[in-house]
Image (cartoon, rainbow, N blue to C red; front, side, top):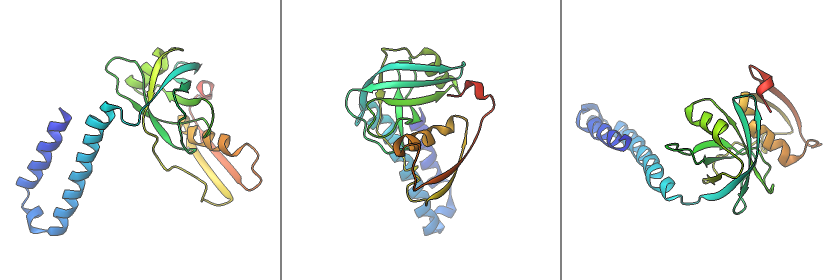
Length: 196
């Protein structure tokens, strides 16, 4: 249904807008936005459903922190190549639930994949409460360029709540003691009792 709405909105934008036809620059910008939307739609409807680049895995550990946070440990069917700070779409066996993007908390090259999940909505609440050890999951293509390597030897990291996850991966990838890097971490959350 979303696909149909997107296409109708694009066509309507061209037919109903005289200013698009009068301004070549505006027309190019609109065309670029439409192409980006069509690419995202194609990726969601075709590539994601065909599971191109998807790796299977089995949940081998779950740590729950209160009712809202769970850290899933997953044994992937083949190594998941990633850099610290990147994310992956996690597909779980919950009916009518689409894969959700989560930052990978484990270090690159670690034998298991760890993902921290905050029950912020209905889908993530199903993951936190309903995922069990032994469940088969899917790990989509690794994405994102949230890295700190080129930021210098003195850094300030700011995180809120479950947003600490990329920083956990960075520390795990570099080790807790890195003489070439000095970091001040500012992390806030309401209710630290539920945080890992």
